[in-house]
Image (cartoon, rainbow, N blue to C red; front, side):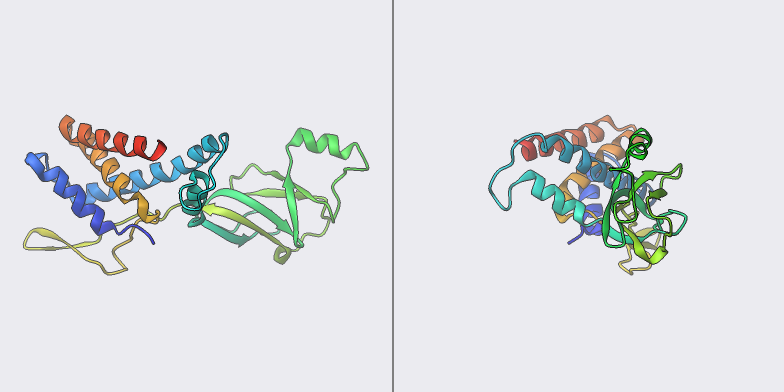
Length: 231
């Protein structure tokens, strides 16, 4: 279940308005919401790399790697690859598994490919292809398959989070929430990230409004949350 943007907006305003710390207009909130979501999303991969180095635990619900994989799984997609090696995904973020003719294709670097081509035993073939990255961030080159058919090439990938949007209508000079799906986009993050989203948005709002008290409050709450999660 995703995080409802209106819940986050109301909590951010409640804390920001306490002790007259300032009002955050919807346009600014949407900008901060997007930045906060991307920051949390990016952190998943750094955290996974960090915690992969340590032994997990046997608990089904508290293992950190398991929980991170669950959060990342929301963004996993499968798409086709064109005959020119371009991945058909406008929201592409990170490449996962490349599949050609139901065979998992391994990625190699250019220097590895030179070495492989010098040895008949490991030279890429139709049944044992490899791929290299192309100059494009969404492009690859399959080596070992002389006749590449578009329908035979697919890949898994991680998509970018959709930009969140607190949709609203103005009534009597006041912005009122509009939950219509055409104007409102909720966060795509796991619902457990709701609290951290609030803290990060508060921190960003404080910096923007040059309100040190608000920024410090958000930063302090965020630090406390992170420390609790990693204990």
